[in-house]
Image 1 (cartoon, chains in turn yellow, cyan):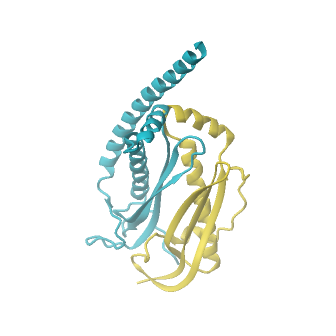
Image 2 (cartoon, rainbow over the protein chains, first blue to last red; image 1 turned 45 degrees about the vertical axis):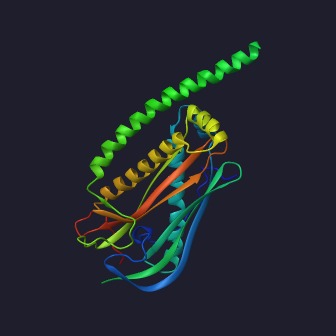
Image 3 (cartoon, helix red, strand yellow; image 1 turned 180 degrees about the vertical axis):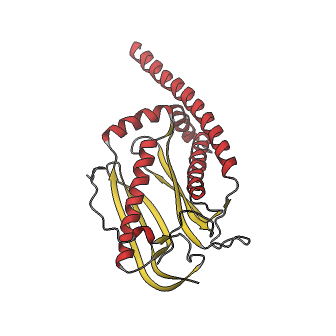
Length: 123
Length: 157
């Protein structure tokens, strides 16, 4: 089972400079070259301590902040992996990004992000 | 007999606690949401893919907001009974509705932080993550339109 503490080092070439949008185009730029599909995923299991807290929450209801943070962080990780792929392809943007979440056996969740890596030029 | 009475009492206590805390939290959350939504009302939100007229964006940036929500004991119990006869589960409806508004508010807060005037192509996604009790994650994401005045933009070289 994948622990939440396990974070393999991820190459992040110029990840900060890559534009990410979920539209087909980026306003102010035109797509010069389509590099192809890029994707990133991560599977996270719930922490035992968090699960006990969640058990209490199931009594009183409301938001599970610990899970929100866990999944937000995991989604960011999946996106970073996607961006690393885009960087390797020489892209400077990822367009039409989509997310999916699916629960895997044993209370683990897979976060998956995918999109199309492209090369943009300002218009 | 005595044992049954004890169990019934236990369930009753859980129901009262669930109902009480759940209701208090729900009302507090709704007030908080209304307050934040009023402050975020200036940002245009649409699920269209093209930028609306009147805004001339110079770039875009993906913004995401998410919330994981659990139902309280009372709602789980009430929905269990309702499921026997079918029909609309109002208690879950309000729960998911609240989570969706929360996710959208968080997305918009991120958009405001980077100085966006509009968020387009907004999508919602719900996924079930609870293994024992009902627990859902709702995410809301879209493309924040950045103008020349926006901060936090990072143009590709």
